[in-house]
Image 1 (cartoon, one colour):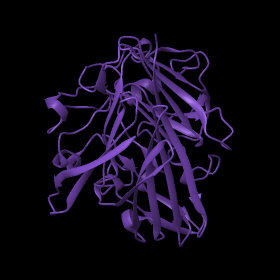
Image 2 (tube, rainbow, N blue to C red):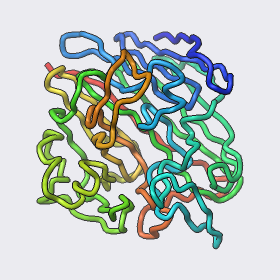
Image 3 (cartoon, rainbow, N blue to C red):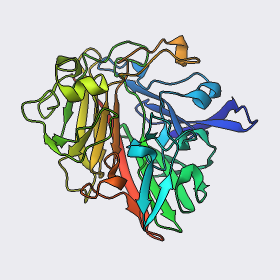
Image 4 (cartoon, rainbow, N blue to C red):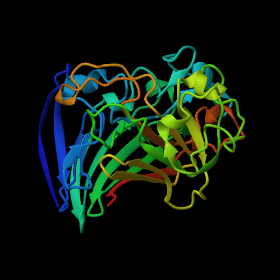
Length: 353
């Protein structure tokens, strides 16, 4: 195992960004930057031992300063959507940015993926970790509480990218972190992901209104195009005449994971027959947004000059359910003052024979 660091350029504010690259003995490499705590690249072997970057992203810091799609992003204080861009906590209503129609998406115009973090790295046996941390001040993005935040990325010898989230607030607040990496197991610049196959451990999903805000219903996936309990191609049903798919332009839905939440469990699998690469997803969170890149458009400064189009990458965003802060029947994302928020998500990379 080894870690290297180098300059990733300066932001438009003159801040010096650093690129950290961890390499394990299998040759897997993960690159991360202290600007936004973003995942910049994930390089893994295919079934023939050829290495390719499977995470969509940008060539330089300027791309991450723009980053409309959220490539590789650490999302907080609240990932996904909040209906009406407001929520009530302890009898007080908090107003947030309306950056998605009348709603709040990924916490507003200034996300956690567009600020600088303190960084340190350390080695523990067969694992190297990079920890990014900062204080999110009271009322940043409109959320209450001074929140001490850290996200730690670790690479193991089992080709696992382990993401550990930690937070403590001095006031009651809401916390819902996720990682917004887009994956394409054929390679970040290889085109459509519709032939990738997916399995999701979920019997239900949360239908939405036309603003993609969950209604509060938990709907059974049985007999619907939303059912991934048996492995199938992403493209098999993506354009089916089914209202939730039509509203979102494809898959962009929160799945109610069939896990206890008491420990980290396997909840999803992504398979690319062409390369033989497989990615397994593990989490202890109750939900996961499965997003098929329906709104993707070409961006500036993409890696290797790639032209990313609609459905060229897929996301597995572990999370509390969207708008859970406004729907009492959903698992609560409220973090009480002085209590610790801890959660783990793992992306594990394998190959088939």
